[in-house]
Length: 330
Image 1: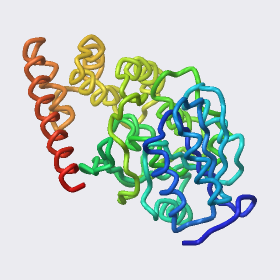
Image 2 (image 1 turned 90 degrees about the vertical axis):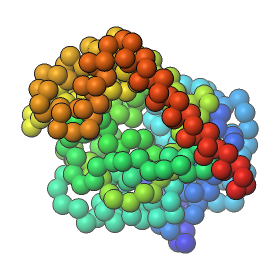
Image 3 (image 1 turned 90 degrees about the horizontal axis):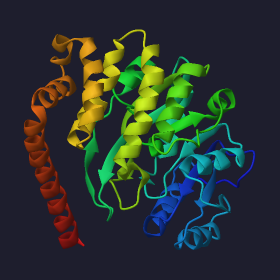
């Protein structure tokens, strides 16, 4: 593993926003320290944690001069990321949430892609595996690969999937600004849409490599607040879907409507489904997400309640079984 002192030689500014992630942040920090590409500076923003997050990061920083801990009052993940951007200087930026972890080749693979890809690529993203709260990997998430302009980005519902999967050019933030701290959810998705529509390097590029493990729905995570997420997503779809040029704008609403139906938010799901149907039922029926939307939308309240109960039961069984297997292996 190569190493480097922080400063001008750093190629990547790694930023971790951390709030009450004491059980997992040590694993996140260690996954950065184990990178086969060592030319990075690492800034961890303790966002006003009330547990031992800062102490754990401080102990790791004592072992590696590339790590810097900055403690601040709690202001949310967007503000923490913004502070990390301001306090760092490398030409590329990568974010790692305090409860996720990277494969050792994460930075090297992303930098290799950035240096070889043609076109106005502002960000690369890798595939993601999901893990339980205890760290046991339970499976991959399907993600597209190759170039993603904003039409594809919206139609495939944020193919990056999570903020820990990307490497971005710092110039993107210089051009479009910092994260929107007024959003309660979907903060990273709003930024990617802004980069894709307003920067000089608007293209996102998906790599066919699983290089990040995302902790699935841990207690207290921002992503577990579905209501706030759908409220934020409603705003983003209203602003950015009309900008689609290659594909019908209704396609941006297909997957969000399915997710909202699954979670029992039938009012917003029905409204989104009506917009999605403007893309045409025949077109929707040609792919699995469109088929799912048609099934949920046409089932009526009673049918959707049965579908929801069946799906929730299956998911609970899968995760319970995975947890039991992890305990036995431990």
